[in-house]
Length: 250
Image: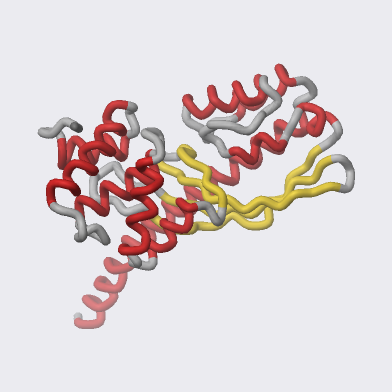
């Protein structure tokens, strides 16, 4: 009987880990599908309009907003700029694609979970290491982090960026070093939803920000979560609805 109870205990303890593994594998699959779609685009796109149409039809791993942004970039030679799906896509001009491109995936693996203090918040960051080949003998290797939530890519961030540094610090529980970076990024623009999400979580849980007064913490948290509520960023909006709905930003 004791042995049976021990077995049941081990199984039950293992269940959350198994569920997490399933979520992790699903997130990795979304990122792999993203690159499969890029490869499909390389193989089938011969003109900018064709490129846009093919990718729009195939990019099921992206949100509708991201698809629209991406199609806009394709029709403008995929120039660098404010695109939801990473600036590195600007590297692929129509001419380079028509001269022949290919893609090799070196690694796609789980990186970390985002903190989750609401039922629908958070997400999973997936690390991707890929090499693109173009113009016969040229290549470029790119390493990025993809934030996946509910089967969609919501953010692509370059390795070594301020955001990725702050996330690493947060995951290592170095809250006092991470918080100022999240705050700086959050203050730089109202569409910095990822940094704002982390900032609101830390402000709410009082992680690395106890040098601020209670009023200051509340004002920052209300401002950033209200951005998400206004612009329909679900994780931030959930934080606003759960903790700060009775307040309005100043």
